[in-house]
Image (cartoon, rainbow, N blue to C red; front, side, top):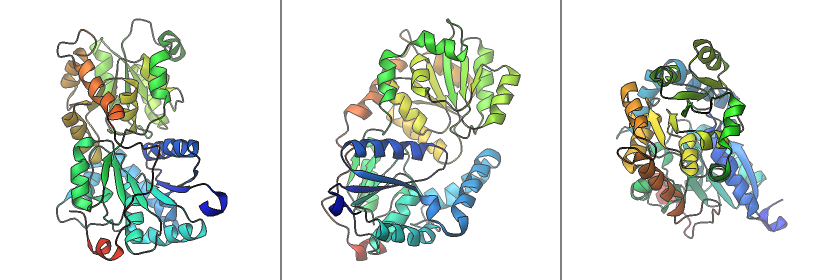
Length: 383
């Protein structure tokens, strides 16, 4: 049933199951749009690839991040950020037929992409005249590499106000700052969570300073070393969110490095009870902490987008970025109401402004007023 037949606007959200961050943003965006009366469908861009190539790409990325980060770094340097890199992903054409077929069978009034490959596919199809509805890109990263940017898309929304001008200049399309798209529970639970109950639930003592540590849904990066440094300091108890990495959880428990947890549904409450978040991906977990008012340290970030995202957050003043354990402990020691440099209040205030100073409401993704020009968009490329 089309939007005209149902009387409701139909929005197609294209995400990717690369970890959980992009899907988390897509799910929250869909919830907000549905609350506004839209019919929303979420698809995984990896499922648009033929011959199960999408699953191969996901497995390959997962393997590189876990075992060969140097290889991912090389790919990132060559294809994501190099000045002479191609303007579109080499995989874009393979998924275009799938999106064209989907848009023809269930015509949307708007497409919203929350992953860079999705932005490439939708932008290229839109530029070639195969996507008749507007295409919006909801950037989920603070560091925006070139594969997020395709001039065939109609509009860009981004949580980092510092790069809005760069996005508009590179694409020739409108770009707006929007608040990070996170579940409202993170801000709400920060105000009313029972910290004592949370501590009891995870087996933490009453006087311990709990530091949440996360390596994303896959539990990747140097998480064990980070937990070890925190535990051995004697000043902090690491509470490690291992996601789906059961091997990591067993290793941490065997070593006695704090509290190791698997996949959790109570992360808003955990953030409300914690002293700080130590993350290595500079992704959705950081944005959720911003909403909860929890100080964020991006420590020894993963290669590529993780490292660049950590730098972008630090430059904006919403998080600290540390490269060794001594620096991590120094930053944590300055947090709290008695912090020597007021870092807790400073970063929390800057992060809060991301939610209150946004001219674009990400929950209401309205159609851009100016349609793209297929001929010029097809020949243009992000610089």
